[in-house]
Image 1 (cartoon, rainbow, N blue to C red):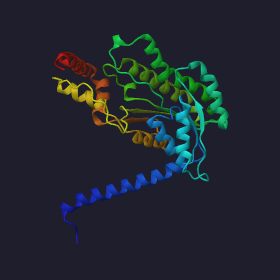
Image 2 (tube, rainbow, N blue to C red; image 1 turned 180 degrees about the horizontal axis):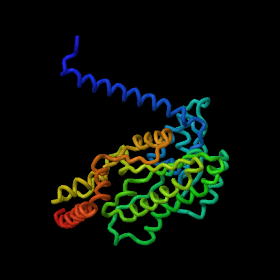
Image 3 (cartoon, one colour; image 1 turned 90 degrees about the vertical axis):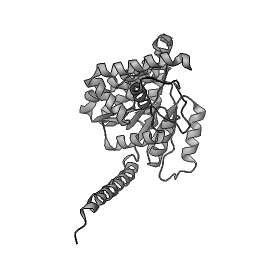
Length: 313
């Protein structure tokens, strides 16, 4: 007996949801096997995203090299990974002190990283320094510090690791960047500039090393939300509702666990570019390319409205 036409659509939705669920489960299972025995370097392993990545890759059997600026935090992460781990299925991580604000130390850091396993299969550059302030209030020293941590540090590390990948004709470098590497919003000039620079560097690198079988991936995400409640900013009413809505969407973050899962999926599926954002930031990216004057006018109106609203606070 034929099904009533009214039942067809719900059944199709249920079947599609089931297929999608099975697909995700299979990919989750494969993600563990695909990273097994791979040498994976995480530049800021003690951050929220870095810790989540360390857990995922460690459970998948990767040989981790965990980097960070604090030895105590690295040791704490090491203990949390190894205490309850199955030592027959996992490798004890290696720990390396890495401070991108100290570029003079990068040569020694590169040597120490390569010395761990004599090679690097996956390099995850997830270090970042954020700043929100008007342009005129940011000192040149702070500008340089942000550029060191967000651009010069990662690019210097990549240049040091790259020869080992080129000689083996394999490797994967992942830049965990920001959507502000593609789209700048007010009061984040230094941060956006450093992210634009990093995006351009990795875009150039992608084409230059393709012949060596090296994959370059960039993940452009919105701001990262930790498990704690995000600070409430700009409580004053904004007359320009459109500007307020776009600004709130551009700063709407992703949870570290979601971003970490996207990173391991990017490595497994060898994706080149990933945008991890809600629809409004995605639309804003298109507006930036197709109708820049409109986008600039909306953002500028939002800045003007917030400035006018300051005395009301």
